[in-house]
Length: 174
Image 1 (cartoon, rainbow, N blue to C red):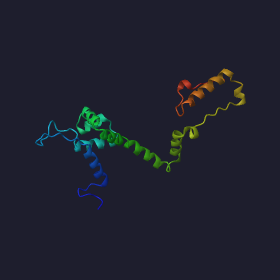
Image 2: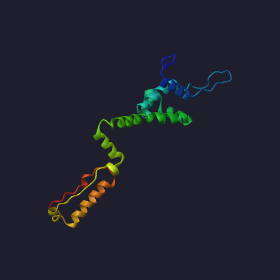
Image 3: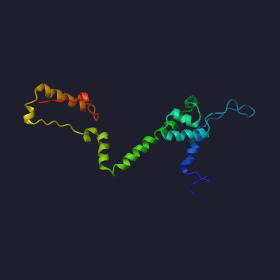
């Protein structure tokens, strides 16, 4: 039987072990009685924070969902570097899922694959600019017009995939 007695899967059991290790322990007096206020970061709060961070929530949203203040979260992560690393890793989940979805869909959609390559390997797969001026149009353009067009094209492709702004577009009338 792959699941534990409580019906949790391997991932859930591992997550429970990790989160329970992140719960702060209370100080006790000589009689064994806890001292001070109870910790706001409990296993239940950590479970809620985990779900929120897996969904891509920011700290304030996660705290609202868990019923704690952002100051409590920040104090806890200041005193617990393992928690901060755990939180940072969880926040990457939406990006990893998006990346997996993108890569899995590359085979299904060749146009999508090309767009992906244009963004990842712009110099190799990005659009190329070609300016063809027919001989009859060439006579209508003076050297200054050609310089303006060349400068606008150079500026357009200088920053890679950024689109030309309207100010970069030059209309030359014959």
